[in-house]
Image (cartoon, rainbow, N blue to C red; front, side):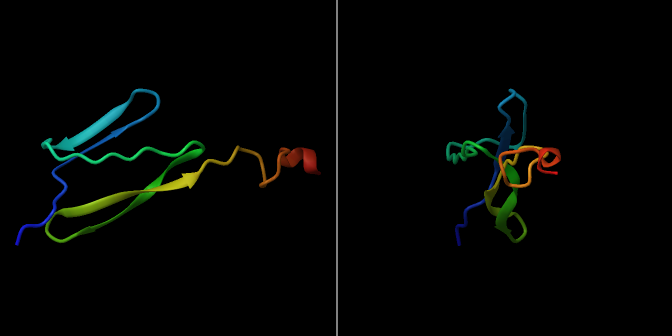
Length: 76
């Protein structure tokens, strides 16, 4: 039967960088990271071709913190 396939995919950053692959079609989907999150990975399904793909967003934690509001060296 007729199945959904990912024919084209593009990734873009907030810095204006992008990379893409495949052949664009009229059918499009879009996902954007929520504020404070970054791309952590992907989930999807495939057989002989890529059938579906979804972004897995992970929270951006400030460097040097342990979940609190102060840098670790200030906690010592």
